[in-house]
Length: 117
Image (cartoon, rainbow, N blue to C red; front, side, top):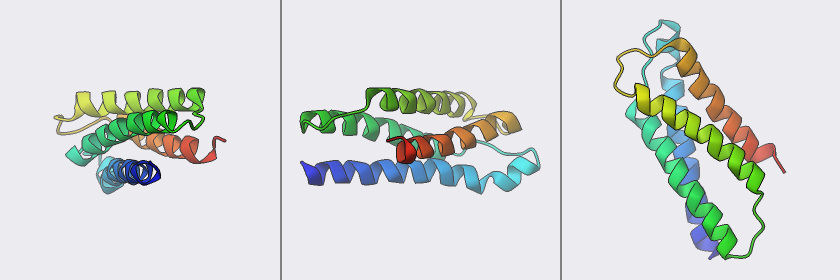
């Protein structure tokens, strides 16, 4: 079971990297007002959602304790990210505020995952 959990953790990190990497590659365009949500950002967020749900299920199946409040907060942040990226995915240009919100929420989700104990 530990190997399976570690595989899903790795996939979850790949999803985070895809979402954050997509944001970082568009930072220069954001300064020029031409940023857009690239497909990697949507796919990364969806990967995070699927692997995160799987990780919670695997942890509970392995009788590990799960901080439901932490998971709920992370899920809420991810749903906001997904909503923003999904709704604006086909737009040629995205507002700086919405684009910055996705980047900020992504970083916040990383800090919640690592610092909330």
